[in-house]
Length: 354
Image (cartoon, rainbow, N blue to C red; front, side, top):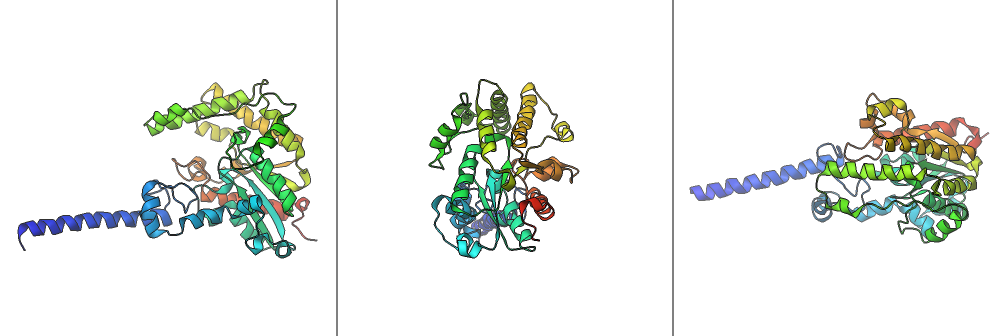
């Protein structure tokens, strides 16, 4: 074999080795160490729009049925919007003797960044079924606001025999931007806003798309949205008024709030809180938002701070990663445990059978 052929073989072998090594790392990162080896946005972890290589090659190579993974996550919400019975899970005769819970919220409830089986709803359902037959429906959706959650609540009240509604509460619920997912949104928003002042709606600055530095983009987005939340507190806007109307419409005997905001002073210090006047107002806004539900006699469970107190470095443990700020699988597990403890010790919710 001449030198040219040897060099070609060595070069080809090197390329193949690099490619196979990358595939192996990808597989391990996706299946076992999501976001630990390098950052991935995959269908397996709930991202409906995965990156180019995942969507077109590597992810298809190792994890087939991407669309099925997303549709499986959305199956409860799909039924709620269509009322099309596709399994026993939605058959009233099959579910008649089961304790039924509607877990409602945005991407925190949807489980962005974790596998479907790692979501709080899936874990809670498994735990409850060890005590009595139960179903926990996940009505979480990316970017949903309090108005969107109100729509889902009313649809579930109308079409499903739900025993308990649990809302995952986060501060951006107060941005009533139409995400074009619910046909009833505009009509509902107009109806609810009657008697309230003008609503403050947050729209992302399009100039952010022109930035290339990821840290700068993250900082700008953070400042931008916190500035919006500080303005929501201004009496000339009606966001708080609308939220009060929604809270007052809920039946307190069948509604529970899981607070997913961080307010503990120790955690504020870890994040150099407050960094600005905007952060200070942001803190006030969260307290005001919680007070709305308290005034409506709706029980609030402090989810984030109770779970965070279990960890020495809560900010790291509570998030999927430094890049992905959604709740980690550890956070989901403990949210499910907190809800399980509440349902199995408080006879108010009707889960405990006499």
